[in-house]
Image (cartoon, rainbow, N blue to C red; front, side, top):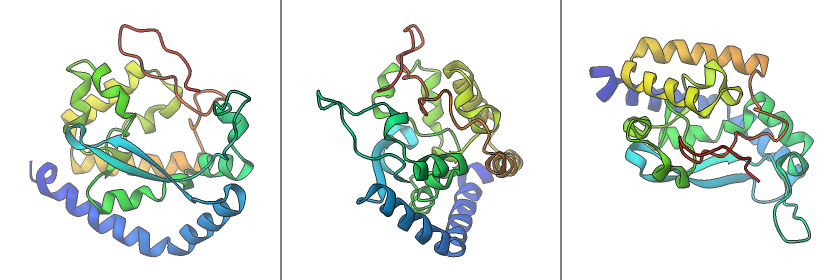
Length: 209
């Protein structure tokens, strides 16, 4: 109970602050590479649901360039993703700015990944429990398949994490994440670089454009 209420936040602040200092040269190098490949802005910003579904601005390094079809619609992800962007995704370096979200208290090092705001009304009451904890940079679903598993499997892992949250589980997930990052495993569901859009448990899944 202590870890869930207080210890986890203390760990988040200490580790995220330390990593931001230690990784500052790497952050600057990635920011420069992102700017040269994609131009300005360097950071991708998007509203995501946090604790209890409250919105916050997620920060990531950009991995895609601006490119549109004749109708003004964005091209498919694989057509907009640059070589630099693909490398950032494979290495998970695009996630590093989320350490700022952790330091600010909007995210945790470990927790269910923050998904899209429009998904909130599509969750069942049970699935919505994933917002009973802060979203994380990594989580139980990420070390058990990441984008290579179905939505039902993802939510099952998310809810298992909410129910079993502990220091030992967080330490295990962080260690497994480091191993996954080194192997660049399970980054993409398909060549589209994104998971299928979640349309609700009773609706068929389709691709995000």
